[in-house]
Image (cartoon, rainbow over all chains, first blue to last red; front, side, top):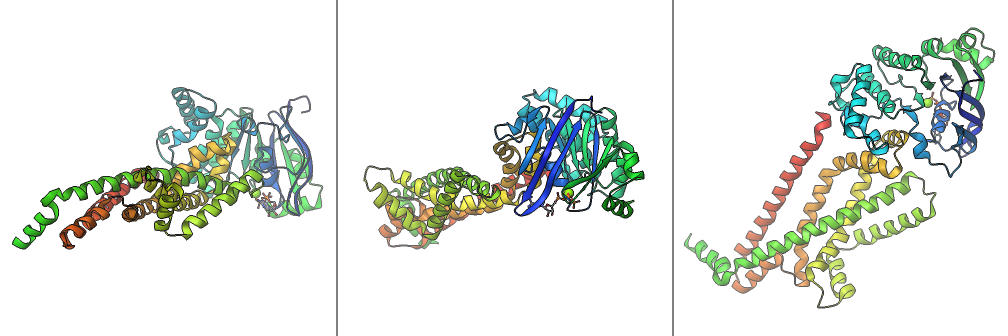
Length: 246
Length: 233
Ligand SMILES: Nc1ncnc2c1ncn2[C@@H]1O[C@H](COP(=O)(O)OP(=O)(O)OP(=O)(O)O)[C@@H](O)[C@H]1O
Ligand SMILES: [Mg+2]
């Protein structure tokens, strides 16, 4: 693993909301092609950690380097940098006033200055990959939750990101729709996409994850390969956590 | 009936008195339309400052100063009658016979309307889910681009009814133009009344004209709303 390119180099990352220290000196590296799954109790700082990676939360301490660039440096152009990082939210956050195709092509056209035809062609190919090409001209309100989340994923992919962040991407979905979204993510992983995934889907963590992090009280309390993580948990808090969710 | 004909002739035909109404209509239109444009542009700008300051927790000093200034502006404008504002603009701020009265009216009503439009836009922007901002920013859009491409269009759609109401209020408010001797519909009708000593027809005519314009405006907004509602079919 260490010979692979490091994408994220995270050193002593801290985040406090007022007096509340939510991230407490988190350090880890994320390499190209990894699927890092983050689990932990509610309120432990998983979302905050993930959102710090694309600076939706501004860290209050430590540093994050992405592809060798210190993104926590105030001089860094975060808009340029965010183009390389896809993010998928629990509540999809599709743009309701735009069609599916417009949702997908807005950023490539405005930010990457792609010609409309090219952007639409690429978007349609991605739609085909997730089996939703017939929805190209529909509006988000006309889709099911699972469909919306698949669109949210391919909308991010339209920017050709180097890494994808997922924050409980299936938590707002009816159970029968979880599978279709995880399926898309599985395909992504198989194609070598680097992913950081906050989830309660332990099955997904075991099957697709290359590394699992247990975050508790703002710290990485344990990290391991999925096999070891679930078979031989060492931290007592992790054992307790796993006994509840498995 | 004979009586009505006589009255009609007296109030509108004789001495071409109908021209007071039609000229007044032109003035009302001009003042309203340009005041709306000024109000929307200025109001949108104020709403941007106010909502940005609200969202960012006012860390930026320049922004905080601007926000404070906007608040002051809103307090003063919304706390004083439009008529006083118009009179101050005409008699104190410009205080010159050479300035166009229409220009003064547009400026005064535009600045007045902007205060209300600003609060309408701001509530619209604040009502858009934070997730829309985050989705925009995470794709790489700047704050301004996110606002322009993603948040503002949705906010605009949501506040369209309130905005239309404000435009209707503004249109009717222009009926005080007469106080700076600008002949709008109301002043025109009133001039006829003072010449013919017969109040009924001129004032009714003015009322009917306002009613027709407002109805047309309401109709147009209804149409626009339905067009913009494509996404919730
Ligand atoms: N914007 C904010 N302002 C203040 N406190 C916040 C903010 N966002 C998160 N917190 C606090 O930070 C802590 C961690 O929140 P976070 O959302 O990262 O937890 P989480 O691990 O994702 O939990 P969950 O599994 O419930 O999503 C919580 O105590 C929360 O109250
Ligand atoms: Mg969370």
